Image (cartoon, rainbow, N blue to C red; front, side, top):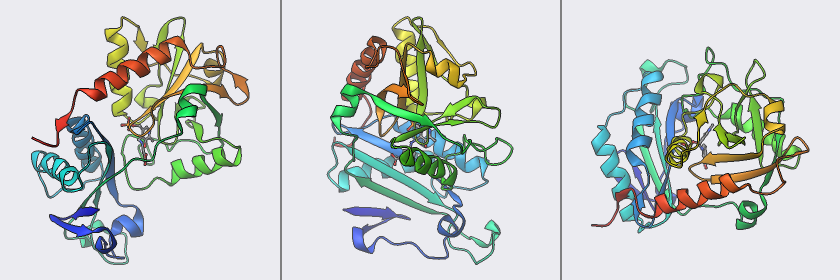
Length: 290
Ligand code: PXG
């Protein structure tokens, strides 16, 4: 595998960054997780847009243009002969000193890793997932805004550890007010009386690219989509529930905090959206090979 760092490609074992990089020392940086399907990079522009929004929020000047990064991501896939894979794009604050000050970091670093993807087992998609609410709440907007896809993922990792301790793969994270925000690396949707509901960004959800795609697909299907504040009660009494994310795609949820959701198996609307999502990933995206 060849890894892109600041304009050059390095072999996997030689792809290294400094111990003085503030991405490592302080989690000071931003990232994206992107998928390639059938030789195309899916929703590339949307991911790069979000990367620039995250960077703006932390006052990080990405030393490459939007168009240039898009080309670099496609090129990194080509270099690694990727047709189906996962691309991790990272921008760190760069090399600085042992002090918080980002002003000491002269140049942000850009890293692109284009690799194969580790998928959830297929059985999980057929049977559905069990998830739990965890004690760790989503960061406040006024602390570290959850809309920023920063390198500081400890809030999510703590929640993931708590879910794993409870024997689950994913956690429902509430915000400080007790409303549902999202999961540790996925957005959350419920279906109630034929309508789709998902927490608003103001509740602490990430502006998920998959979330956006699913909302568009649902609207095309004529389903009503809304973004109200949701409580655990709303989840327990949903007809269907599923998670969305670039890595996970659409994962049906069949149990939350011990309560069976709907019929206890992936619901019809969830399954329809899964089919449509797969169809979309088959024939859209930025071509890697001309
Ligand atoms: N919420 C959070 C907190 C996320 O980090 C999503 C929702 C889903 O967003 P997208 O744009 O992917 O639909 C994410 C993103 C990984 C990995 O290694 C994935 C994410 C985050 C961190 C790591 O698979 N998902």
